[in-house]
Length: 224
Length: 325
Image (cartoon, rainbow over all chains, first blue to last red; front, side):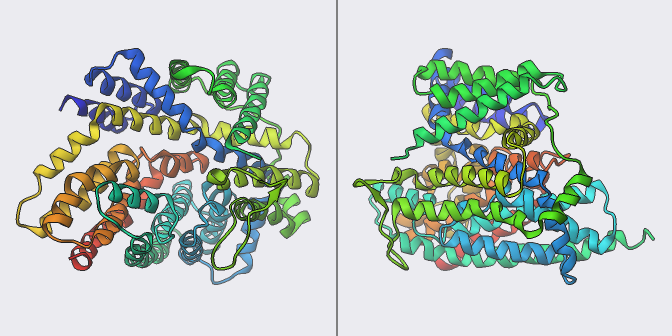
């Protein structure tokens, strides 16, 4: 049970709102010490994993390109395009984005969109413009809500789309682990059983997006 | 042949430039610690394979202390004003989308060129002197890196932006992300320490104790909720899957109750994804975008996801119960 103390450090540390980096260091140290490792052993295990996981940070390479495009007015252009489409709302825009993201993820194209590549420079400004089109100026709080919903939609579409693809990491992991345990499963069967959840996710989140349009209208109506 | 090593050299070089520009930025009150932070990040990419495990541990500890102790300031890179951006948007119009689209197109084309494609059409990998263009196992990351470089180059040339703009603008966005930039890699490392210390085994044993011998419905709930909950703790469904599947999924759902293995595994993993949507430990999905979009509440993205995640968890439980048995 002592091994779980590191988990407690993570939960409490994040809940209190300490800087996550320090929480992670503390949790690693507590976990390692509780498991009977020496401090330098913990540090070495941590450093080894950090080095092996550098690929996680390769995505920052897209920031220069995105930054230049913002400098040249990409967000402004994305906004003015929204102004041309009269029927657009935050919910409808994000449903279209969710559909595209889910379908492309389902055929394995997971890195063609993402928070740095599409959400920040394109979809979030479009969603904000759609909100402004409907409600005039929106408060900073509402702006944050629209942005958060855009990022959330990207995640949800990705998570519940990618498992339909045969060669995605999670499918390969499942096949490998089940094989180790002496159970043969076919990738095709795994992706087939991911379909009902994928479809349900589209309708559940889609309904929430449409509700967001209605709710947003309600909060704005009295302030004439 | 391009390998991940070359991509790391590129990332390292970019962070070297960010470090130098940060130190030279007098508008940043914490320019020295900010510069040191990016320099250490650069060192990790350029020399991480030579520092040894303990050396890398010391390096990441130093980075965490700088960033966690508030050592990262925000610089003032030369950029454009909102009015200038508006004018530029009108001048360039839809040409602005071209470099943005180049990133996914090159990523896609590059992946096919390196790895080839078997279906729906056959594409052979491109060979140069009998060697593939890049390491097939890392085809997507290598192609993404190429796409990012080509897009930045195109944006500078096509939209007549200053030559310094890739670096200044990249640094501007990096400063906005700040300490959150380090978090995904840190959490992956924490997961490794958890694994070495045997956290998974303890959790799997606890979950198994909760499963009654003769109630299928409760067993399904324990497995799916356990996947979501343990994913929230680990920040990653991939870490939770072996633990819960070995502890509950295989012995109870598959062996005792005769569940269809593929349905149990697939829907179990998707239950884990519901947990990913609700935890700050899945930093690159939940915390990094909050920083990137400059949300006041760093948990804003998670809050927007919780309702969908909870409904989807309930649906996954129902689907597994109905479809796997």
